[in-house]
Length: 208
Image (tube, rainbow, N blue to C red; front, top):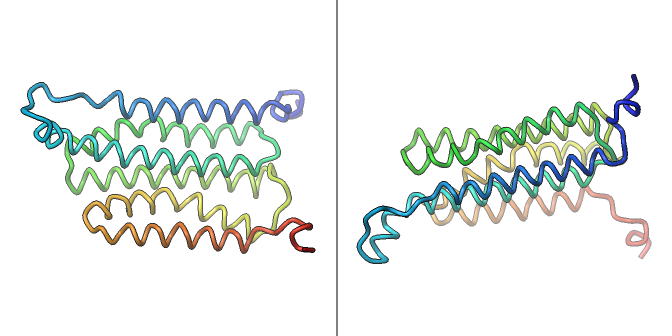
């Protein structure tokens, strides 16, 4: 049975896959907030924020992580022309790791030690690697993307695979060393500059 007959190449397949993925991201980011509960006893606003500090910090980091992963996921899927069953499998791996993020975030604020941070950053790095598998399959195996230069496809692979783990590690590092924010800004700006150089300009802009 061909992919067309099985529905793998149907016009709505990619659209439904994006909608399903967005729903998982939305649920994960909602569960991050649902898991936060105020302390039973607190004396004044200052004491409340002291007790809530680890939870709110972990929530802010995870909120940023989900945001970065969603942006990365959106950029990958905006480059796809179609979807198939293989893409579904790799995408489910990404979504499964995203769905576990609230649990890993709870570990981060309950233990808030070096081992918990290592587990957390490792989990986020796995999300990035899984996203890299999605792109690698779509661009190099399944041929699901629009035509593009190999250098651009490789750059996208490196960016989606490494960016979540790097951004997460730099965010946590920046909470201890404020100058880490400068490194993060330099990373983002550098990736944008490289991406613009590798992305071909439309014919109208080139002729202008």
